[in-house]
Image (cartoon, rainbow, N blue to C red; front, side):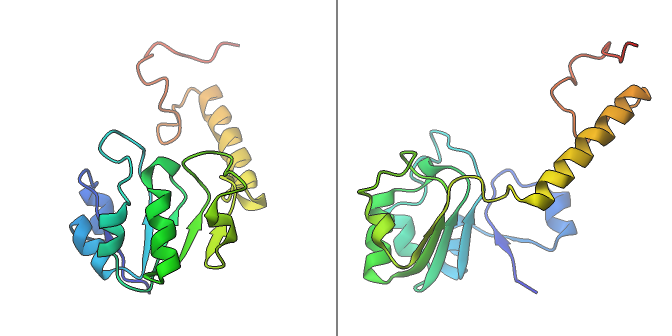
Length: 163
């Protein structure tokens, strides 16, 4: 039942349509969202994407969640936004410097949830990863290509299972 907004200059329109996602500008996303989650790589264009200016554009009382890459967030600006109360909270499992230095003010803030970058590694994800690996091995053995999973050998059309 969550109303999902997304900013993605390279969005897959079929995925967007299938899941009822509304694409908006980054400024609109920041201004309208109660929760902002980051799902992008660090590139020269995205380093410190979340900085003093973008944090100021975020809806007062909102929450920032970064499980993507530490380089996306200016931690000093985030700390300031959290201490001032502009942001209600943050959830982080990636940091500019890893491991997070023990003297980081992020550790002392009550409105920050910190984790190491393995939050998605639980029993269910392990089971699913093992099942997917087994499924792919069977498909390859049967001469079928697991197109949805194996992408690093696409440029090797003559690859085949040898017995």
